[in-house]
Length: 159
Image (cartoon, rainbow, N blue to C red; front, side, top):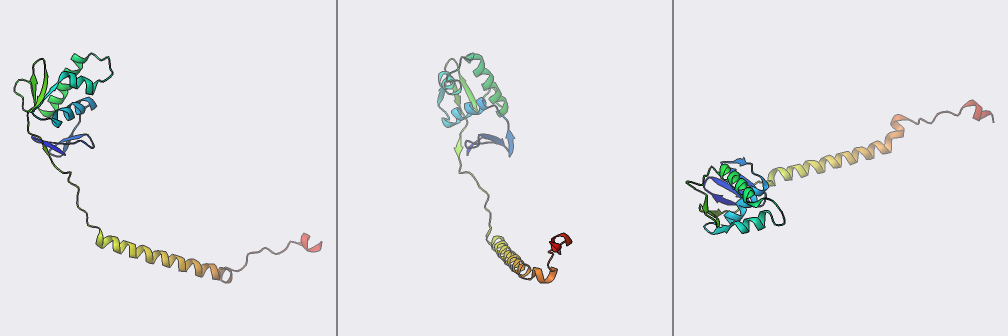
């Protein structure tokens, strides 16, 4: 988990959140964010961005990078004139200027011992009761219900 400012970014699930609310971004904006936050404070050149986001594409790169960068800045509440997160280095590239901390992903701790043991006990008792019931019904079925073999018809008796 990467944490910067009020944001949390999970690189595994590629989800950006702020105060627990998911921030929706395009795949390219997320890829750009990853490039920038992997190297905070370092220059990421426009050529690096092109190689990573549009490796074998004939996309109009100059316009495309501007669009993706603006989407990312808007999602972060950032602007180019007074940047908090992404600084433009004219004719060279971009630099992520906010400190980025890596945190271990917090998984909720769930204690299962008490109720799972009871659940297993109840399941075992239910299975045992069903097996005993099946055996009793199976061995005594004919005695309780009686035989339902139809009597022989008259045509088969006369032959």
